[in-house]
Structures are given as structure tokens and as C-alpha cells.
Image 1 (tube, rainbow, N blue to C red):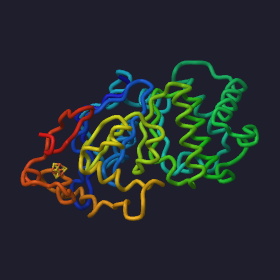
Image 2 (image 1 turned 120 degrees about the horizontal axis):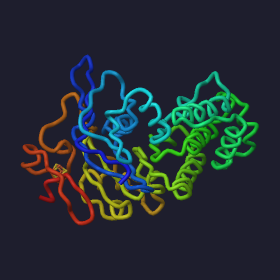
Image 3 (image 1 turned 180 degrees about the vertical axis):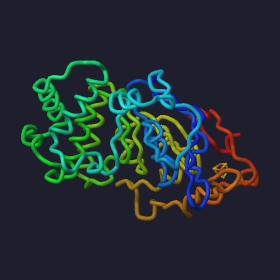
Length: 321
Ligand code: SF4
């Protein structure tokens, strides 16, 4: 097992009160495995990614444990924490431009990342050799003319090129786990498909584990081995992608799958999920999905279901009690 999340809770102090982003979450990712965290906005998936790389904002508090390759992430401090980020867990953010410094050329940023990593590991640094590594990294993400790209500033690159530079950075840092938080949502559909293909190829080629965070099940389907469906800060369903898509069991997953557009679906087959996700400052009692669930029962309003193993997956739903 590479990533192990146990009893994770994340709360934010806000002027309106305590916002519970993740109530309690347990799951793991194996070496070389890809797990997609899916759910609507506000379900806690980005908080999960930020907690794993310890980049939660100062108003956040967290409990539970996150271990990456046996390392207890929440106890890391200073130099150890900086070495962990990038070297062991690398996060790609939603807006690729935010991942780069706008006033530094691409080569300076990539070389600086390698230099810092090597110094922290007590290894020697040679700029010529590191430049070769960076060029190989850009070639690895199928970037044409890497020598020219290296001399450019981020604003001189397209969105797709910037996201490739960020993925190339992940490639040269060789993290154990790549956390990609909506990495294609700021890109057009053609570039989106290219970036997804790239992440899939890199996973296969380098055996990296991937945690793919997205609201879009159709996009995640192409890279993931398992889906972890989250609703209102909790796990709803966890299982193999093919099984979850062809035979969703949790009513929320059923609604998500029904809302995926597909050429085989006729007009009227696409159903949007009624209502909206709850306000996490005062989430509903019982099952958090009950105000929107077409299968709601009396028990759902009174008791939050526990997680159960049903067939080949984990589920949080009274239908499977
Ligand atoms: Fe629906 Fe009840 Fe299951 Fe919640 S526990 S998803 S309300 S059936």
C-alpha cells in the first residue's frame, strides 16, 4: 500500500462558523494504482488533496492520519516536509498557471526544483546534467522543441503547454504519488484528452500512483482503476471503475452516472441531479444525501449509515444494511 488515509477529518474556521469539509474518510491507494475521487463541488475532494500534500490554509484543522509509503505525513516539519512535497507527493493544480512563477523562465523553475530536491537529499547538483534531465522530462510529456520552451516565461505558453510543463516537473521529481486536482478543467476538450492520455502513459511507464480529483466521471474513467465517490465530506461508494459505471449501487453514484453524457444516450436520457449539495456549515442529519435521494426511507433521516462491504465495493447507504 502506498497511500493510507485513516479517520481523516478536515474543518475550516470561517466567520459563519465551523465548515466541515471532510467528516471522516478511510481509504488506501496501492503502488502504481490510480484512484479517482469524484463528486460535485464542495464534497471535500480538493481538501483531501491539499491535506495529503499538507497545503491546507491556516484556518483549517485536521485529524486522523495520512501515510505515504509508511511516512506519517501529519508529523513532518520544516525540511522534511519540503522534501516530501514534490519528491514523494506532487500536486498538479486546477489552474496550471498558478503552479508556475510568472516572472521566472521555465528552465529556472524546473532547475530550481531539481536543485532543491537534490540538496535536501544531500546529493550533488550539476546544472548541465540537470538541464539534460529537464529536457528529457519535457520530451517525456511529448513537448515539441523543449529547448525553446525552456527559455520561455509562463505567459508565453498556452494552457496545454503549461500543464505539460507542470507534468514534466512531476516527471523529473519522480514522486511516489501524483495528485491531480481537476488538471484539465481549465483546458479545451482536445488538450484535455491529450493531458489525460499523458497522465495515463506516465502512470504505466513510471509506475506512479495517481490520485485523480474531478467532478467529471467521464474524464476520470479513462485514467482510474477505482472510483471513490464522495458526497458532503464522506465516502459514498468505492469500487472498480467498470463496475461502478456499469452497475452503480449508491443512489448518489446512480445519479452521477446518469448525468454522464454519452453518444449512446438519447435526448431525455441525461438526468441532472435534483437539488444542490448541502451547505457544509450546517449539513443535514442522518444520511447527508437524504434531501436529494429518490430512495429515501425514514431511517435515512435519523441515522447516518455506516460503511459496509457490498459485493466488490464499499458503500455508505441504508439500502445495503
Ligand atoms: Fe438514499 Fe437512504 Fe441510501 Fe442515503 S441512506 S443514499 S437517503 S437510501
